[in-house]
Image (tube, rainbow, N blue to C red; front, side, top):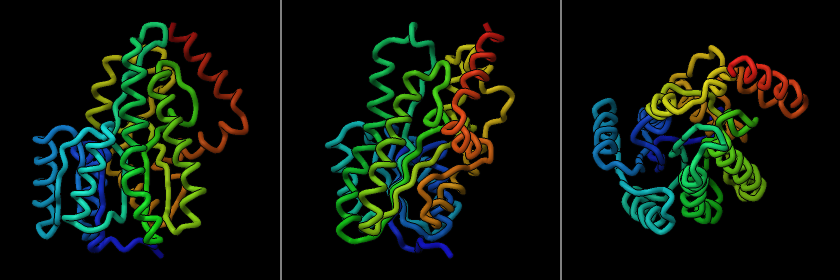
Length: 270
C-alpha cells in the first residue's frame, strides 16, 4: 500500500518547467497534490503551470522563477510557497544541467557550473525544507542523480562528479532523516528524452556516444512514474529501467567488467 497521501499535499518540484520535473508535476497533479514549480525561466514556468491546470482543472499550481543554486533566493521562494500552499510534504529536486566534453578540453567554468547547479541546486532546496519535515516527523525528499552517478563515463568528468556528489549527499542524509520519519530517495535515470539531452548531444565526444551504444532514451513520463512510485514505497534508490538497476547492482561487485567494456568502446570510437 502507498505510504503517501497525495491529495492536498504540497509538492515542490525544481526543474519543474520541462523534462523529468514537468513530468513529475503532471503525475502528482493528477493525484490531487498542490504544486510549486521552480525553475529559472518565468515564461516556461508559466507555460508548464498552465498546461497542468488545463489537464487537471482543479489543480493548485504556483510557480517560483528562481535559480536553485542561489541559497538565499531558493530559501525565500520556498518559504513563500509554504505560506501560500502549506508545509512542503514532498520535494523533488530535478533541476540540473549537463555539458559533456573531454577533461583536457573543458573550461574550468564548466566544472564549477555543474557543481553549482546539479549539486548545490539540490542541496539548498533540501536545506530549506528538511528541518520542517524532521520537526513534523514526515515528508519525502527525492533528488535526481544519474546513471553517470553510478559509474564513471568518458566525457562526463564534470557532470558525473556532480551527480556522484548528489548521490553521496542523499545516501548520507537518508541515514539521518529516516529515523525522524522522513523518506529520502535518489533517482538514477539513464539518458532521458528531454530538452537537456537534445542540447548535450551537440557536445558529446564520439567516445561518449559509443559507450551509450544504441540504448534508446527513456520517456520523461516513465522516469516520473518511477519517482512517484518510489515516494509511495519510500525507496532509497529509484530506477526507471532494468538496465540501470542492473548496472547499480553489478558495478559495485565487478567494476573491472565495466572498465574493460568502456575502454574497448573508447578504442573502437577513436
